[in-house]
Image (tube, rainbow, N blue to C red; front, top):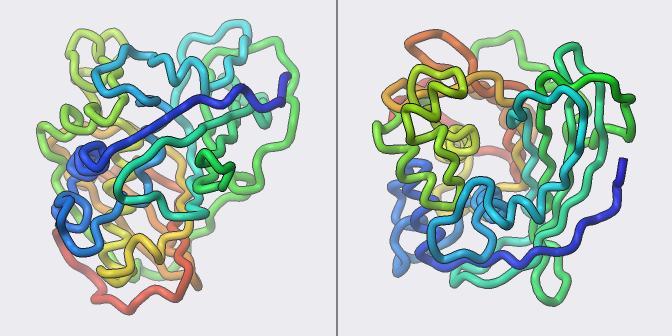
Length: 301
């Protein structure tokens, strides 16, 4: 297993890109969708799309050139498909709201044997042209069907332990219907996988219809958490990190229900499809820099 950093890849974004991403995760707050609003800022999870987009200004193929360069390839026998399994996103320094160019580099951290395949962890860093670190990103991918290999490396500390939910009722809940065009808007940020828009591609992958991007579901969930526990004018500066595990697909038109528990500076949460009572994001928390604000117990968007 090669654990060296791969060559850096140039990535970039504009204010328009920030607005498109915010709309893709359902933002209506002017601070994220109007370039002249007071405090206009990138939504904290925006960098997850840069590994798809690269520095492109137009539609890109899937997988994109940036993906091919930034996501180290691990060749394992028997792999049928690779699924996004888990994520950790840590904001080290806020991105400039006017846009800019950055360098993204990645490496393989570990490969672990699982009963139905392999869990592969990658780590990425987003740095500016002066080598200042802005974001640290960790991703876990599940290679279904992988066999005849040995585990190697150590899983990243950010994803090593499970999140233990309290036995008490949630401290807050929010629900929201996923727009029928949500995936169609989100893909404009750089993830043009046909699985999320083409019915034929979705059926070939085993789904009855196109599904929402997992990272879009994550963005919606983080938006819900911040809307409840971070002061509106400080949502971006209060955000420190988020981790999650993807455990099920979401289809446009379904209702997402996010349940939240305060645990110090962390907000533990799960997100489920309300109509099915089926969890789609688990093992998750949003970590803030300060103590979360107090909230009403239950609310609806």
